Image (cartoon, rainbow, N blue to C red; front, side):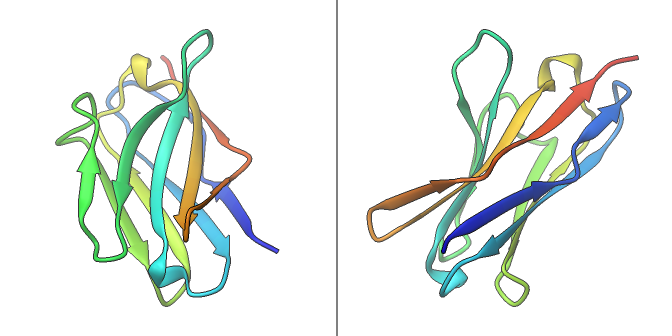
Length: 115
């Protein structure tokens, strides 16, 4: 059974940092295309960053230079390093994995940026 479990969210002050982790219980994690998405209240879910099976990365313009996506194919984990956080980064962050035309989501983790 496929499971994607996010962790690492919380409350942080503007300018602070957080690291999110997605732990995957899947077969052959290295072959998956992985991504982080977020959804703020009243807004649609949006792509934050993605990383392919060949480690090619893609970022939303709003997070370029502040966020870094990284995968560990030994530990079957996906990470999102977030720096210089802004109040507009407040959202529920979701891990997404795709393989062979199938798509899976984690349950989400809340990130709140506030003083």
